[in-house]
Image (cartoon, rainbow over all chains, first blue to last red; front, side, top):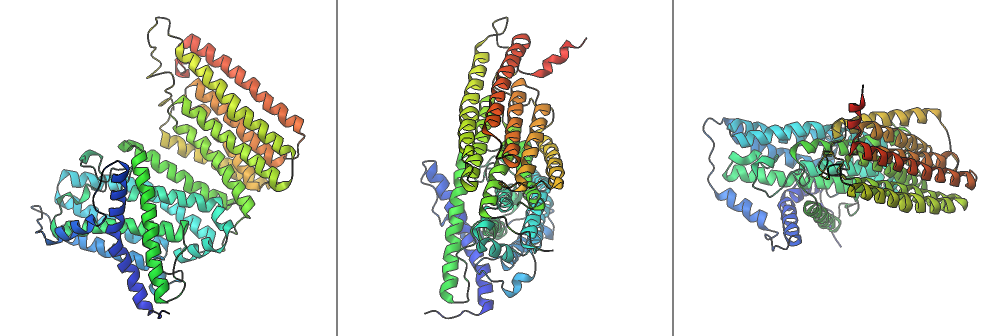
Length: 320
Length: 239
């Protein structure tokens, strides 16, 4: 027997789940990856300890850095905390704030966060941070069309571009799952997520080789609580993208259909379990492929673009 | 704007297999080793055989079982084995001076034989595939056994195989491109003429064997003359 939760509380829980569980998902991936390489690996809770340590440390700013350098981590974290309001994190029904923006709106907020971090990296004057920012924006420009085509697919499949609508469509019947447009869009989105979260084959996540870095190089000059916010932010971005892939495209099951406390708690557990399972898949990919050379990343993006475009084509011919 | 209705599970599954055939064709742009190229061709042929069996089961066309089995035996087993043996034979023959030839890093290495970068090639192929898609889609040909989109995809497979043959400057990829084009045509035949007499289908399959023999001859002659698989060497022959 469980009580009904007030809607604002569920809305808040969406954000809190993402914020709290995000470092843990990174921890699971690091752990699984290490075990597959025969190492013991860090504790799953290690990212939390890292964040706690960084939050206690003093922070230094490079000489000449302006207020942008200090505002960006906070503003980026605020962006990442906004997106979970727009996507189905816990519930299968749209929450009031869920209709503030569609998939494209969520994408804009994610890009805004990435833009702010890039500007802060440019502000430092450090070559590595600038290189990371410049690369992230360069390759971002070629993965952006893929995201657009995925959104077009969603729009054609559901007639709207609300993530809740697609999740409901996918749940509605088996024929929605095997249709080629859905599979192609999900695969393209997964490739974009591998790029956006800085995983193999695009980038080594744990490496210390600056020359191959894209996302990882950007917070090089930040320290203390600001660095903690950036790290936490990128973990949240990872979990947000996983949630979009899982709860909208691949496995929109296990979401709470009511406001009952039991259902919502079950949804939280289900989300964390699904994200951890996806993390294991990502760890397997991390361990079984080599990092692409920097100029081969365009080929990876071209592959994702091919999948997304084929998805839209099949829909226009009426067979998707 | 209204939503595009989902096809039935059978039509969706069949379309997914057809899309897989097209994706395998695109994958051939990327392969850097001949061995992998042949393997991908075998996988593509296997997908078509699976589709034939699926159609046979769903639409009660028993002769398609025979066709599926025959095409699997021929295109998944025999042709790849023949190609692989041929390529191994070429690998063993040394150049005229007994040294490694200047054909590149190795005879099976066909990476970088494309005349455009991979990403540009893929974009070009997407444009050409789109032309095939919509040109055929506009004809509105309906088929009783497969969704019409499979026809569009099959034409795209043939067109993209053309792009592969044009863009790759090595004889082996061109041969594979030709064979893959035949795969596209098999797919077309499956859509528009699933009830075609079996004897005709089998005749087409054996035509393929003739093509393999011709290509084997071409590859051998070319390799004997130019000591490489690259057709770029042929430009030297200009007067």
